[in-house]
Image (cartoon, rainbow, N blue to C red; front, top):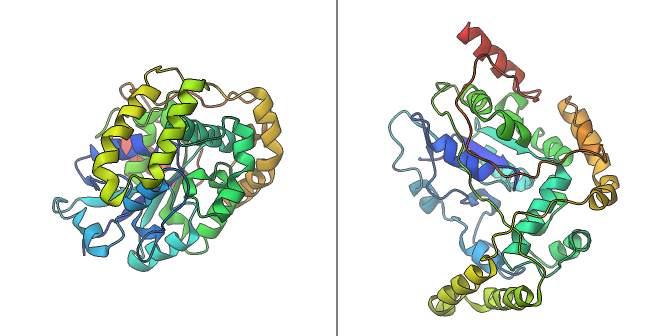
Length: 342
């Protein structure tokens, strides 16, 4: 069977797209051509209905096993196969399916400040014209109601950042030594060293990739009357523009999206007031995350914390020495790398 041997499991809006592209550049790694197949999110046909744009998302699930295996047929002999579906970290049932199919699977999770992650998630959907709520806090308040109505996981702004709960469940079915935890900030600030930590975890050569590309960069769409009209049209079309209507809807949606995105504004930063309002809603889980991992994430609970707002940029060349990662499960890999280079 041509199944992957490792997975990038999360989190959404934490650099997983850029990481997927970077890992694909390693000569010993083969990443699925479909970046986010979502295969293990379901054990049959994907859901139907959902929120704006969800019909298209559900249609993208590579849910048939034979189709999923074909994603890895072109892997060279001896290459490790991998895929990246950032919702696997959130979905405990998906984790169980992975363990049943690939018992020794290694998993990589990128963790981003949960409030920054939620804000980036909301900005992504707002700027795509899919999020009808222009107030970030109000959108966070709506996520449970939307989840109950069957909206896809990407609408769960705060829930997707509850890493303490997610990792606690993950470690019930996956040994900790099979999981590598990394911070989003390390991928941004020390990209080459972070890649080498991942390569060491996967037991492939370090130093083979010296940059991370800019991928999945989100701009900000202003809350103007014109943009609200375009967004409403995109949301309406997203609910009906599938199946037999898809050939007619696709060029229309592309035209609307181009006009919506033509401003090309930088992403609006998260306001201190919004951060302060949401801190009480994430604090308990951040403390759980610290207990589960043994690592310090207290900076995420600092109201004056400088959030990680900038997008991934092209990284520089590798420097001298080795910079360790703030990751309790990465320490062993870091120590092996130091010994090897010594």
